[in-house]
Image 1 (cartoon, rainbow, N blue to C red):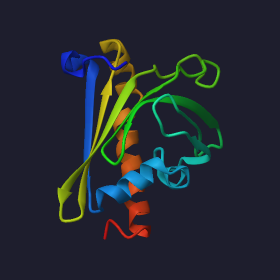
Image 2: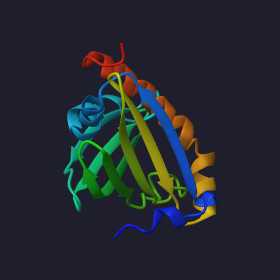
Image 3: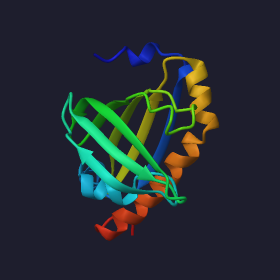
Image 4: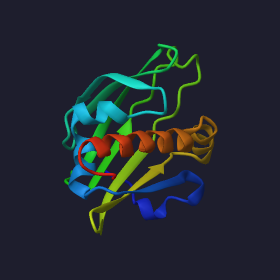
Length: 166
């Protein structure tokens, strides 16, 4: 069950938005299909040798991001809400301490909204909700915003191969 997101204070909420020159259905496809998601997910220089998605409430998303140094970062998430082609809500599982050398990023809730803004364009909004302000600060210090924006640059490039982002 989702918390009342409107009551979460700003010090526990982070929003990242980007407009893509691609129709909402195409942006949805890039997020919901494991093949397409594996082509662009992650910051610059990262790849995804494993990307498994069961896109339904209660379904799992397991992926492994491989860094430019060859190191693997496995992650698991559970989908809480899926409303094609409008919204995906998921929460990542707490990550393994050993993989992140005793400093794993915390678990937090993500709400991804796909808004058709006309003329074949899509506003993609990522709202991240944290259990504590300290968790938000920790994720921010790790470069979460910058990593997401780099990932969205890769998404724009991938969309261009699918007929979007001219």
